[in-house]
Length: 341
Image 1 (cartoon, rainbow, N blue to C red):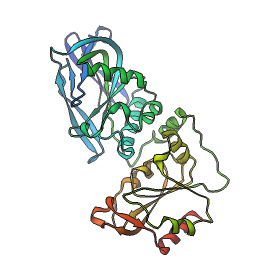
Image 2 (image 1 turned 30 degrees about the vertical axis):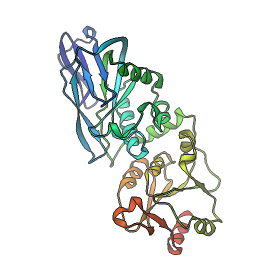
Image 3 (image 1 turned 60 degrees about the vertical axis):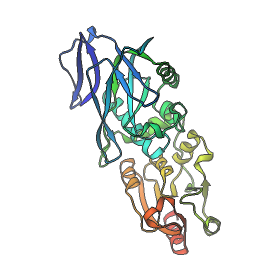
């Protein structure tokens, strides 16, 4: 499996790993030639002076590999005179949607850990058709999770962004590219991943004397229209009702890490469930009979108990359930009560 490329004596040599053993083909490591790299801000096109043409990368869309194209560096790109020992290119689809992003956060951790790579300089690259949806990539909602969580240097990323903005290239000894995948049946590194992210935010799991229950609320789509009635019926339980957008990334992590039971209507915010303690519980509520397996598989590898509950649609329809509003009837409330007792 390719995990880096290095340019040597006008040759372009891939580094492969098989069964955790490093195999280097036709290369003398000490005789490398510095590579040139720029990434355009208008289209996120990756330009280098290597002969590689594609980067096979794992995408959560279809859970398979898709190529990200490389282009030849042209003569009109100027030298910034900035040189790095290495840089990590991280394939992504969305950086402002936590469900999509968490796939690439984990596989980046897995890639670095399995290959024993130390690298604090990263740059996001995007699958075709996704870059223009992101807005300003230097001001991502989850920058703290990407940089502090994984130990990358934001200032180096921002400096490179500014260099690329000036139509200049950087010089790099080794370019790493995340090309790991996710095995939703078995991911031995996932527990370590959880602890590493939390540790980088100085968050520790606490043993709660009573069950700590968190109920994620939404505004607009999939909003619970009878939430006051729900709160009244569940008032005897220790439930913390929150809107995630009112909290920082660190606060969201800390709240979820010390939640024993997490409840919420289907949505990206439930992705935080993976940072719950082992054997905690996620209760995912779906509008009507709609269904996906988004969190069933995350809970499996994160060692979280999963419970699915269908709730009533107030406005909208099941065929477009993501735009619906919902309500929870007495029978459904009773199911929640039995789960959190």
